[in-house]
Amino acid sequence: MFHAPNAIQRAPLPSANQESEPGRRETSTDVAAPPARVTSAAPVANRPADGSPAKRREAYFDNVKYLAIVLVAVAHSWEPVMDGSRTARALYMVAYTFHMPAFIIISGYFSRSFDMSAAKVKRLVTGVAVPYVVFETAYSLFRSLAGDSDDWSVSLLDPWFLTWFLVALFVWRLTTPIWQALRHPLPVALVIAMLASFSPSIGDDLDLQRVLQFLPFFVLGLRLRPEHFRLVHRREARLLAVPLFAGAVALAYWAAPRMQLGWFYRSSSAQELDAPWWSGAVMTLVMFCAALLLTVGFLAWVPRRRMWFTALGAGTICGYLLHGFLIKGAGYAGVFDVYDWLAEPVGLVLVSVVAAVAVTLMCTPPVRRALRAVTEPDMSWAFRRNSARR
Image (cartoon, rainbow, N blue to C red; front, side, top):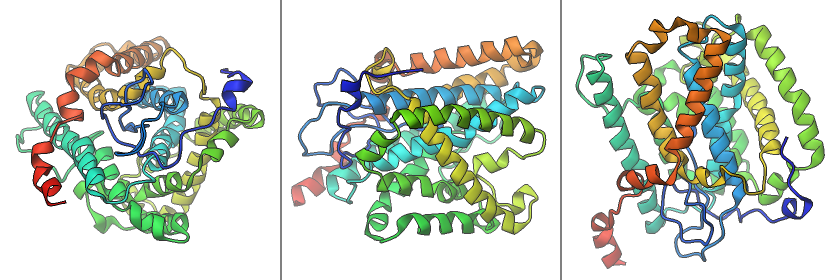
């Protein structure tokens, strides 16, 4: 599909010490602006930590973020129209198996240098906590205005739709020093995820089920090195990815009428899915392995050279946070009910194209500039006292 010249393929990937931060102003000479973290979807950034020399942005990771956010938006657009199509449901299951794990792994990779220093905590607050508060409030009011909810209150403890990822990233990054200190962090994270999968008492606050069940992917990202990404770009990996995805689609087509989608969302315990408690632990391991394989296949085919969409990878935080208004707004307006032909093959293609084009436009520089006050807020006034004490 995409083949980079050998000279480009041998180019070094960015240092694993670079930190992921959403939507901050880029200081490097690369024309791509700083990425923001998703994932849907949320997105991740690809830039050096404060005080480190400015480094050129790596096109590969911007390509990963853009292609992943398109998958997130397209998969979300299928939800209202896929019930009558087994094929659409199968493709949805395949996309949901790996698109968020891919975002989370990259988020972990670029969070390796997080160390609770004042500068990085400040960036965590301004780049993750502030966008969460703003967009969770905006989505809550949006639901009420659309008539989907009679409750006009805003609860920051109950993330709605896609804002859960910002909560999760905030928690994961705060715990990064712990995972970095453990000798075997990934097995520990997997055990935590397995325990969460059959613990319904965790409840819905802060969507902790998702935070804990997706945790192993973030921890895996923390353990990765640049050579691991070079390894997945070998020709053998790209060739193996083709039968891998073909097999995944075939398996998903068989499982589509038999398997609950709740396993892919990781927002519920096994008991809440009317399954035996032990199946939560089993499915956690099965879904982790499936997600890892498909993520490797996806990463293997992402081009490492600059593409027409590379610069858009810097704006994925905007695409992630905004596309929910489009998807939910269309549902509230009754678009999918009035035009029931959208559930037919031609309609599914149209819905997919519209979602892909819309999220692409949402990642463009003008949109990023318009949202800069939210995704890149200047809160130096709030941290000035701490700086003065240092």
